[in-house]
Image (cartoon, rainbow over all chains, first blue to last red; front, side, top):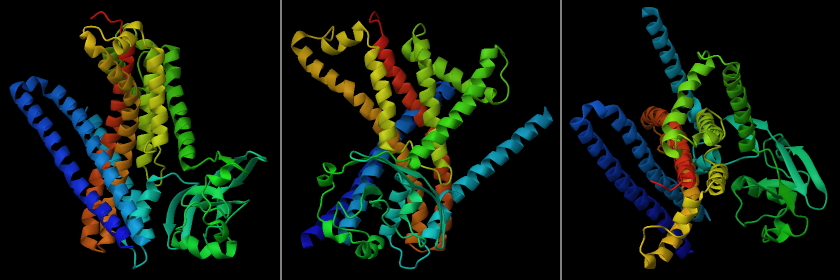
Length: 86
Length: 379
């Protein structure tokens, strides 16, 4: 019984830590894109439109990676709380 | 000119008001209705969210107090011994909306199973009460695989997702047959709904197909790419409307779309494409077997990444919106609820952009893979 509860606790803890790590990774990625795009726009203001659309698409790709994390952590949390209810 | 900009602004205002209304109604009401009890906990919210993003046998719209408003959908079961069986999903619920068995079947944990054969031991509370008077308990230890041999059945029901798929297909046909009819007539100036879709179609042709597949070969793949783009876009946007099904957030649907791309890519693979995979030119000989393994794995990871990208972004979008609204109910605080609703409205607006971007990205990557396959190899 204790081991099941511990497992549930670990699942919830893993979900929380995982969500945090995912946020760090995605934040770094989007920050890097934003920095590069800003720099590019400052250097070449006439290409700002193209840079911006490209930036949004790459940001969306990174966001999906973050959302993978959301789904995984959500499933972990759900399963953890189901185990806890047993 | 002046009047035109004013009507444009008015249109914009109406559209944004509608969007705001949609995002407010999307889930707050559903939550408010489900969270009427005092002892609601976080687990019930996660269950609610899971229920919201999952497929279902009936189209549940809203629950006010104890009144459940839902559209019953047809259940179609093919039994290997007896043939087809048809009935409505409303037969699975009695007048108090308690789940009951019908025709030898019942719905347990969102899955259609033979009545009396619980796959797993733990039932949720609403089920536990019912299971006694229906006599479910006896075969509680049976695994669902055990009764697959004797009296097995195939579940071909029109579920919520299938119904949503049919609706979106009808919508796509109505819209695009109307658009196509005008092009067939040879009218060059677009009008009506055509003028809304023409820039998007031209964008897909010029910026996605021509640049990635090549100006001389793109035409064969335009019907596929356009269908792909608009199917994903329409279903993404339909999924954001209140009470709608989460079709593109279903991994089976996205896998099917990715398989289309996969099959089309492989069947259009030219000599250069296969040569590049099996005996990569320009690579030192000892490295070629290693590259071969990597390239063969790469064939299969492409559709998998397409599948997961669309599935995860749409599903997670729904989860995030519902979780933020759910916070107000979990913490039982009005302030959190108000801020959460505003915040989830913003997230829903972002979801509209994501719906567009994901449709674009899926089409872009599909055309890139097709472009690699049809490339002649002299570059």
